[in-house]
Length: 491
Image (tube, rainbow, N blue to C red):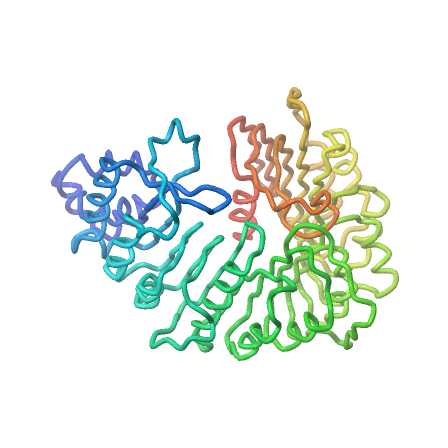
């Protein structure tokens, strides 16, 4: 091992970064020299499961004594002085709910002490270098909240369907200095869940928060949202609507913020109250918006919009553009279409003459590879902006029955695109079967169905640059959106 020890540790960290856990463990066991080098990678993420939890949440299921003892020993190892400082992220959620006959679980009333969760809260302060914490379906006691607030380096906190044991009106000696907070509820709204959301919001330090994700419901009192107007560094806001309408209180709330990136998501459509007043210009600070086409009545009035993502019926989007015209500075356009009409797509694109990025995603299960062929082959004939540098076309096929995956030849369209558009640098084509991901509001949610995500299998991806073209055909489940975002983010 003489040659290996001569290489600086910093260089080994670069070499080993990105290796899968199984490979990292193999390197760790190779020689004692690699143990301190691999330890930060192997112990950077901690997953803790405190109990089983049933839905509806009338009871929790604790494992039998033997499994409880194993979990406590595991918790003691991860919170030890040697391991705890290595942890950068932590994920806390119940074990997947299973049939009682298979889980070997004892059922306790929710009011009983949480055998595994309480020790976790007591030792949470050991993770002094933790940056990210995600909790799902948990009940936070005051001790647990105090432990979260005491983490000195915590920057990102995500809470999914979590409840709180205190009221937002209560005063606390501690505060939360995270920069990114995400509160999401996949369950039906209830008094307990809404109270938890308000309680967490009351703990935030206004000078720290930069990105915020919140649920919105008519039961949420608008005065509870007013502290957001004091968040001087808040630039990104993501709101999950729960079958609400856009009323004047919601408009006033948006106008009170300083956000530059707004994302609206949720099930169903988003109707407007008839008596609302929309100022012109609307939200002049806003630079990026992602939401349903039904909201374009508002956001086409944003004069400084640069990035626009719209989901829904392209014909409705075309009508909105004819009525209001497009923001003049949009350079990045993403269309997530539940209803596809080629002529309307072409007309919508023509409203944005300064595009440098264009992404078209078709989500309707009625369309197959023939429609993708038609669209891709027609793209070279579209009067695309002469400044367009990156183009992406994706078909998300959601078949009711398993069908044979058709391969698609992208080469002719790629050659014609690069020939007709000399400024175009990168082209992305993908065709994914068994892909289910309704991200935003709008008709694509099919009658108000809750947001669902499922990774795709049988994926064909073609990534082309002027000097190289890479085609992939993957049969296992992959995260197409994740792959695309990493690729797209690199320019």
